[in-house]
Image (cartoon, rainbow, N blue to C red; front, side, top):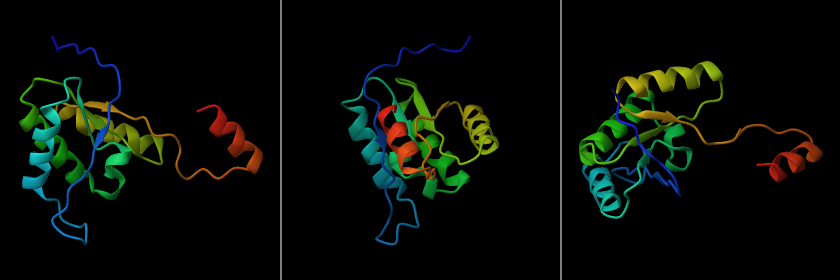
Amino acid sequence: MARKWKIEGLLPSVCVVYTDKSCRELDEEAYRALLRDILQNQDQCLVVGGHAGETECLSMDERLRVIQWAHEEGKGRIPIVGGIVADATWKAVEQGKRQKMRGSMPFSSARPIWWHGTPTQRRIFSLNT
C-alpha cells in the first residue's frame, strides 16, 4: 500500500539553480545543497517543478531530473510534489503520468497564465482566485 501523507500549510516551490548567468545548464551540486538547506526547515513536503520554481523553462527530462534529485535528498522523509505547468490538458496529464512513474505526487496550482480576456473578465477572474 502506498504511504499516505498529510500535507497542509504553505508549500513553496524550490527555485531552479543554474551553473551561470545564461540559465541554460542546471547546477546539480548547488540545487542539491539548496534542497538540503530547505529540508532542514521544511517538514511538510518539497514542491519541485512548481511554476514559481521556473519549471516551464525546463525540458521534461530536466524536470524529471530535478524531481529525482529531490527524492534522493529527501530520502523518503517527506513527500515530493512535482509541479505541473502546461497550457493544454493533454500535456498536463502526460506530465503527471511521467512524474507519478518516478514516485512523485503530481500537482498543479498555477492558474491560467496566457489567458487575456476582456478587462471585465480579467477583473472578475482576479477577484475569484
